Length: 100
Image (cartoon, rainbow, N blue to C red; front, side):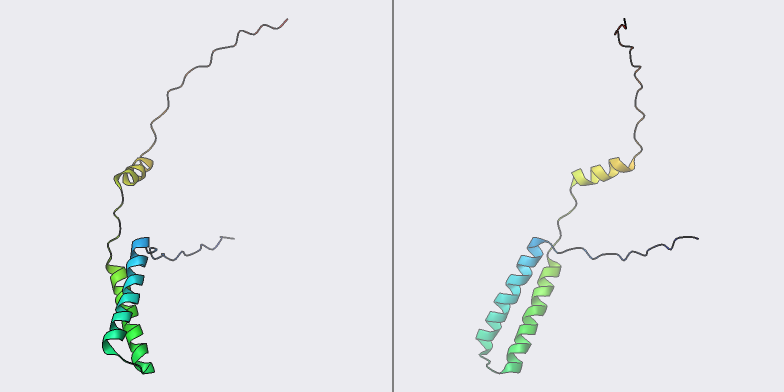
């Protein structure tokens, strides 16, 4: 009986530390600035400003450039894809142990 194959879902790349830091700072600072500048005290106004700050933080986090793949990593990937060179065979010499 053939075994069913598992379908794997492609995973989204994880955010880098820089993306998390820039996004978090943007959310906090933009929300604080908008709250101070608007001087709102109503509940819906604060919620709206918080949502706008969150959207701005996500936008900033997604536009931070990702680090490019280093040459060493790409060379390792390229070299691992190439077939290995055949090894030279060296004959093993017989030991000079005498049995009595």
